[in-house]
Each structure stands twice: as C-alpha cells, then as structure tokens.
Image 1 (spheres, rainbow, N blue to C red):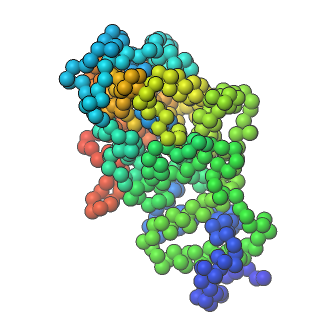
Image 2 (cartoon, rainbow, N blue to C red):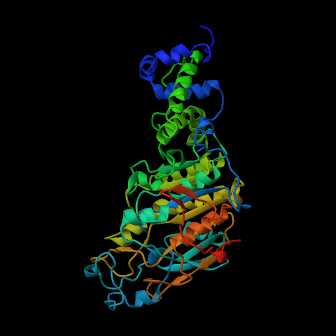
Length: 479
C-alpha cells in the first residue's frame, strides 16, 4: 500500500465515517494513541484550535521552585496531637469548655476538653516541637516550615477539600494543580503535567473533584494513577500488534483532525484527542516512571516498602519522587476515604496513621535531597481542616476549621521556622492567621506566578485562583 496522502485521498475522508473506521481498526483509543507513538513526538496539544496546551511556559518572574508534591491528608489531622502542643489543654482535660468554645459541626456535640495523650519533644537545632508520633519527620525539622495558624471556611469534608484545593467551598472550580498546569505547562510531554496518585485501596473523599479542572479545559485536569505494581494507569497498554500499519493509523489521525476542525469549541474532544496521543507517549515513559522494581533495595527500604504497615503510603511517595524527577509539574498524593477523620478512638487511630506515613514521608524528603531535587521541589503536608480540642463522644475529635497546622519543605522554604499560633487550647488561630487564599498566594509566589496576572476568563469575568486582593504572601516562611 502506498503512503497515505490526505491531499490525494480526500474522497476517503468524505466517504468513510469515523465509526466505520473505528470498527475496522478495533480499539480506537489505542490506535489513535499509536499514531503519535509511531509517527513522531509532535504533541497534539500544540495543535488544538483554542491553544490550550501543556507546552512549557515561562513564569511571571524568577521562581523558587519548579514542581510540587502535595501530600494531602484527607480527613483532617489533629493539630493538637501532632504539631501544636497545648499544656493548658492537658491541665483542663475532662472539664467542660465555656460558652465561647463550641463544635461548629453541631453545638450539641461539644464535649469536654480532651488533652493529648502524646508527649511532645523538641527536634533539631531549631527545637521545633512535634509529637512523639513523628520521630522520622523530627529528623527534618531544620528544613521545614510549620504553620500553626491555618484556618478554613467550612467544617464538612467535601466543601473543605474543595476550599483547600480550589480556593472556594463551592464545587466546580479548578484545583490549584490545574491552575499551575495551565500557567506553566510541563517539561516532559511524554508524561502528564498533573498526576493524582491514589491509594491502592480506593478513592479519597469527594472523589475526582479533588483533581478536577472545573470550568477550565479538561486538558488541565489531573490524571489518576493507582499506587499498584500492575496497571497503575488503566487501559494504557496497547492491544494493537507491533507491526500495525502506519498508513492505517495515519488515516485515522487525519480523520480525527478533520472531525476536530468542524468542532472548534468542543474542549472535551480536544482533551480526548490530546489524551489519546499522550497515552501513546506514556506507554514507554509512564511504564518506566512507575516501575518501582528498578529502585534499589536500600531505597525501597527507606520508603518503607519492606513493611506491610508502610508499604502502601511508601509506594505513593516513591512514585511521586520518580514522577517529579522526570518532569511532572504537580503530583498530588491522596489516601483512600478520609483516614484522618478520627471521630472515635482518636489516639489509637493516630498511632496507626503515623506509623503508616511518618517513615515514607521522611524517606521522600531524604531522597529529594540525595537526588538534587530538593532546591526546586516544594513538598506540602496538610489536610482540609483540623480536629476539635474537646472530645466528640468519649475519645474522638470532630472537624475543626478555626485553627490547624500545615507544613512545607524544599525550595524557597526557610527551614526550622514555626509560624503563627492558636490560643492556649488550640481552638482558634490568634497570631499571624493564614487563610487558604494566603496559602495559595504563597504557592503561586514560589512558582514565579503573580496571582493578579494569572487568570482565566469564565462566566463573563477573569477568574483567579485566590480571588482575593491583595493576597498576603507569608514572607517569614520563605527564603
């Protein structure tokens, strides 16, 4: 068969429908993907009529970091048990709080003050206080900035997750991973720009909205990847024989482009075609990036892959390092369900959770330093809110938006820093309060992005991630 020339075979384009061709070729998705793989590295994203691409773009000013690993602790970790020691809370254990201290979820559920059962100790040269549950993180305190004065706007999981990810508790907006991808693109066109690394045991609370691009083009949404050995990305591997006809695939690509030209405003179609072609390039690059068997035994042990207790989260953290090492811009690590949601048996649940996560997180920080990735990678550890300093029921803690803790490490961060404070009970942030908008502004600043210039026109106005003017940049935690 002669090489296919669209200029001399226009009659084929006019007479053969895409459905007819797909039925003859079998798997349309894989066939289209292989077009790019066999035909070269040209990115379909660069050809979209609207220009919504993942090609790398310059930031507004010189950035401190190039990439982000976002360790999201869905469910909301207890600040007074992990990061924010409160001796007075322990003294008042079992006593009823006054009328000024209420459970925002349900005032009738306001219990007695519940002091932490865990001892706090000072770590590092800076003397940062952390709970005894975090000995591995304690090794890195001289290189992290701990913010103890975070506040949120909602006490329900879904809305609070949305607020932390998108800047608003109202659903439908793009996550900040999507904003960053939209602003900067990716350095590796053979891998997604934005990856949501999921636990092998399931989806997090609020599901796919945690990495949605909202009303932005779908090309900027996160790609879900499972932390498993077999098929971490479903349906990626090709079923087409290696000797498949190049001419047949070229015809399919040409038909897709003709189909696309007639639907200039169909962003979903643009994204679908781009994703199929990205899938082709990923068949080699992603398979390599997610193959943890290529890591040494010592590296796997450093992340806890040698222990059933730490293996799952260690796998996610190690995959995150392998992805950013290969140019992925934003990696979001999420656990299944809402594990930090300790409504009952708070102490024992925290023991189990920290045993599962403390070593892998420490391994990630150590590995980033060893591989020269530390100075231009930002690591963030946070949940959507904190927990009440008083009890729910006998021994649990409820959702709490008035004050919680977050830490950051890596490029642009002033290590050994503790910023902000809550009151003597850990109930309300009272010193250097940091809102979610402040946090997002800080993140954009580190990436070299001016929040006022980063906008996307939607619903008759220029939308921004923070939608706040001005955004306070938390200078004391930045270099």
